[in-house]
Image (cartoon, rainbow, N blue to C red):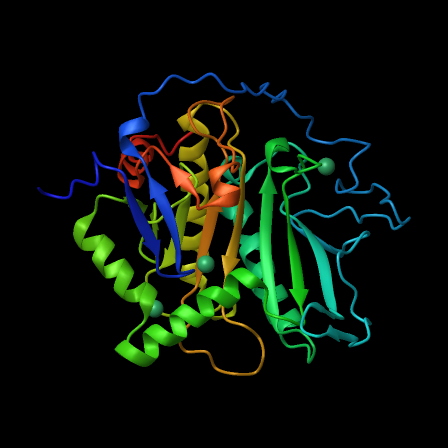
Length: 343
Ligand SMILES: [Zn+2]
Ligand SMILES: [Zn+2]
Ligand SMILES: [Zn+2]
């Protein structure tokens, strides 16, 4: 009997994290009796006097935002980690283990406009955001005690974003966080054993097959990874091999802005709602080693499943067993391929 991924339950392997996902395509017809989310009010004012990110406003700790015209970066007023944390160490029989963690947490506003999103910004407006990501990766990464720079965006109340003002966060840390640590191990071993790059080889395979590719431009390919867990999870992969945002050329910065804008616009059209997601870049650590195994990419993890109000939950079997999805990566990609790229 042929093994039909469209029909039969199966597990798929994520070679980047070495985790499995259970795919149950036969269940996509089952009736939905779960929670229906309320659609959040969409319209936002261009300026909100109560927003701590809008130009000229005062932030929680008392600092006042300048009257900025493009982007703004500032140290998080409630940082998760602090730069001058002592290197403490606790180890009781390998069972009670803790370490001091030094780090820097920043907030980056994409625009002075309170009511925009990446999808609603022009390439010209997004370009300074690319420049800032590059500068911040370089500046924070060059600090002696910083070994990893994590840039991420939580978009929408469903993802816990407390403020609709378009912004992201940068958490730079002394240690390598768990997700990039898993990916580093996989990429290193792949390079050692196959003398090639895991994501370069994966991208070649996906471009030959085409069934999970949503679109691409000259420098980036956007696809639903074979092993995606979230219904409309995507991977934005650099088409050339390089490991860090700091290596982006001017052309690649424009292409990245183009890819992010086109992807988020397609997302918005999928359920005709400003699409919530968590996204972030994975790039090589800044520990002073060259890390030729690293291939720059971004992950988008949107929670929505079937409509603007029906989200996927990671509960039950997913907390206790392994992540599971019904709609296949291939049909999710087909859905996003049909979406418009204009608002
Ligand atoms: Zn604002
Ligand atoms: Zn590569
Ligand atoms: Zn990654």
